[in-house]
Length: 107
Image 1 (cartoon, helix red, strand yellow):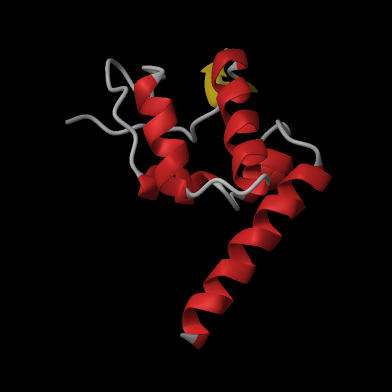
Image 2 (cartoon, helix red, strand yellow):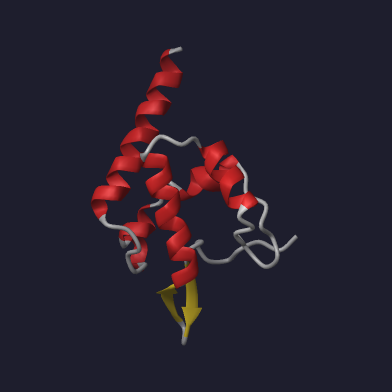
C-alpha cells in the first residue's frame, strides 16, 4: 500500500506546498468536531461513512489517522506550510487532547 508523502490537507503545485481546498475542509471539520467533544473513533467513523478519501482510493479512516491530524502544528503554518486553521480552533482541540491524555495517565 502506498503512503502519503505530504501532510493531509496539502498538495504540491509547481514545487511548492499549497493548501488542498477539499482536504482543508476535512481538516477544519476534524478540528471542530474534536473541539466540540467527539472522539477520534467517532470522527474516523463519520469520515469513513461519508467516503472521504484520505489517499488515492482509500476512504477508510481510523482513530490513529485522526489523532495524528489533531495537534499537527503545520495546520497553523508550522514548518513552512501555509495555514489551514486559525490558532483559536487549533488551540481548543490541542487543549482537549492534552487534557484527555493527562486524565488517562491519572487513571
